[in-house]
Structures are given as C-alpha cells and as structure tokens.
Length: 461
Image (cartoon, rainbow, N blue to C red):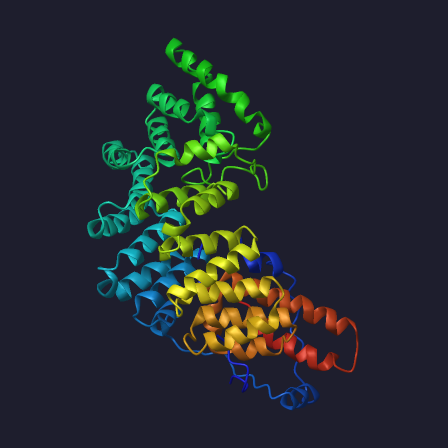
C-alpha cells in the first residue's frame, strides 16, 4: 500500500548516471534481522504496511510491458529507461508488444535504432534505422549512424552509399570525420588521410578526429609499404596540433570510438577559426543541425555546442528534438543551469513529454532541491505509475532519508527489481544507511532494523 500523500511517480541516454554517483552499487549485505513485536508496532505507528513479494508466475519482463500505455511518448520513455539499464531484452519486448503501433513513427524507430546501437546489437540497430529511413530518407542523423554500423560490419558498399548521401547533402566536420572513419576501417588509408587532412585545424578541438589521427598513425606504424609511410609522415605533421592531449589513453572498446578517452582528458577550448570553419558549410536546416549537434554533443565539446546554439538559436528553438538532445546533454555534463533552461524549452513545446519530466525530477534530486523534486514527482505520477516512476520514487525517498517508504513503493514489483542495476544500487545504498543508524543504538534502532530487513528482502540474490 502507498501511504496517502506519498504517491510514487527515462535518456536518455545512456550518459552520466545520477544513481551511480549518489547510490553506488555495493555488496555489503548482512544477515536479515528477524522482525519482533516492537518493530511491527513501531512500523504501524508510522502507517507503514509491508506486503510480501508477489509469487506470480508471470514473466517479470511481460509484467513491465503490460504497464506501458500504447502512446508513442510512453513507449519512447520506456525505451530510453531500459536502454540505460542495458536491458536489450526489455527493449525488444517493447517492440514486440507495440511494433504495429509505432511502425509509422520516425522518432520512436530512431530511438530504437540508437538504443540497440548503444547496446552493441549492430544488426538489430541497422534494421530499426532502415525502418526509420523508409519514413524519412533524408535524415542525416540516422544515415550517420547506419553508415558507421555498415562499416563496422564490413558492409562497405552499403556504408559508402549512405556516406555519399550525407556528403551530397553537406560537407561538415561530422561528414568529413565519417568519411575518414569509413575509409580507415576499409584500410583505404590514402583516402582516409585526405579527408582527415581537410579537417586538420579541428583535430585539437574534436575528440573523434583526435582519436582517428592516433588510430591511423598506429595502423600505419608497422606497414612495409612506402606509400603508407608517406601517409604516416603526413599525419605526423598535424600531430603537434593535438600534443596537449597526447597523453590521453586511447581505447577502441566502444563500437564507434565515441568513448575512447579517459574521463576529463579532452576538454580543450576550440579556437575561433575552428568554430567558424566547423559551421562554414552548414545548411541551417533541421537535418544538418541535428547531425552537427549530435556530433558535437557526443564529442563532449560544450564550447562548440554553445557556439552552434548561439549561431542557430532561432532555428533550434523551433526544433523539439534538438532541444531535447541539448537538455539531456547538459544534464549529463552536470551543467544544471543550462539543463534546466532546455528542459523548460522542451516542456513549453510539449508539457506532458514523459522523458523530460523524468529528467527534470532527476536533475532536481541531483541538485538537492528535494522539496521541488517531490512536488514535481507528485504531478508526474498522475501521468505515469510504471517501473521507472517507482524507481524515481525510491531514489527520491533515499535522498530524503525517508527509507521506510522504499519497501512500500517497491514490494509490489519485487520480482522485477533484478532487471534494474540502478534500482539495486539504490537499495544497497539504503542498506548501508540502515547499518549506520543501527550502529547508533538509539531508541529507534529496533525500528530501523525492521526497515532494513524489508529493504534487504527486495535485493535479488
């Protein structure tokens, strides 16, 4: 049962996570302390009711799916949440359940493509991007993703077809990088170097180009072919542009090279002429702006993002999807003022857009504005009362120090908690807080022992 007045209420995207910062996963699980009459009496005094976890034989994933409404906004919201939980099975179950409903919705299909892209299910991502392109063939944003996936899968003919469509529409930093990247994977280093040199001035400020420079130098390092050594020498000439970042640790673990640098190693301020060149060939259409801002946000280059917004503010303020992209980006960068600004812009265009309402509450929690977060949460649950909303309720209760509410919210979905690492992290962090309270040996310790036992029961084995 949910106490009166305390109703419980994803992303994007997939990427700084609030729970990971404030509720780190741990394994400090201790033996359950038995309940006693005094504990139970104390619990009744605070109007808390613990109900045993459901023993239903229904598959937990299907339970989650059954709670989702068939509106495209709700579907997109859950795709985002479960992508961040790295649950490809739940995301695919959403498609299986609502495919007919959303097969004509470009934005949801694009969201599914990006979801499986980040989850490293390449062929599935290609399928969803292809479905999206059937509805909007000129989407440079989607063509960009599909080009990289085709190249990573060794399907170079298809990759070059998509690449040529992008280059035919615009010649920008993003498209030049993509061309160099595809030809590098193809081991056509001569063409790759030509593209890379055309963007040489931007290497110091653009992490994708920076990584590709070092990757290609490494590829050409041991080649016995004289032509390859000439190409390597050409790349060495532009290496000094990025010497400030030469100690950064590079890794190609990410499928697209987007997470190749150690944290906080690449945040140089772009020079004015670089900004000018990066936008000099820009077509201020929505498609070009979406591609550019997708590129620069993923490069974590706030100066370039800010510059593009200032230059094209009038166009961007009319584009719902770009505003949503920037709201998520600034949230993940930890820039609360900017994040709130773009959240407000999105909300003004679409007040009941669940992903942005969810993001706003998480931002308020992270900023410590818990009273405001609680007000927003109470409004939020009038629209949504599904698994992500219950997670948000548990997280806010944890931050408020009102741990006794957590079992009330989560017991009805106890059999689904194992699907959510963030939920488990919140529960384990709460257990640690219970341990601290019991060590104090106050008159409340028996009560907190009982609450700890209820929270412990929710943590999957």
